[in-house]
Length: 89
Image (cartoon, rainbow, N blue to C red; front, side):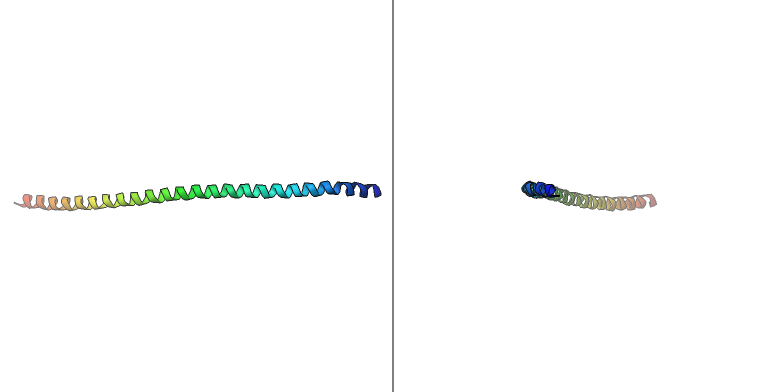
């Protein structure tokens, strides 16, 4: 029993060092992970801004197409009306 106690007392400084090393390694890993998350967030923000810009542009283009289609429909109605008048003569 005493032999075991002597071994533990000699191993205690090594265990303390190993414990400190493990804690430092975990802290370094947490910092590395956090830095990676920041980089990912910046990339996602940039991508989101680009997608929003593209969506705004497409919405504007869609509105132009809708307006043009409305004008074409009005012309078609007017021409159909005119054709009906010519047929009735």
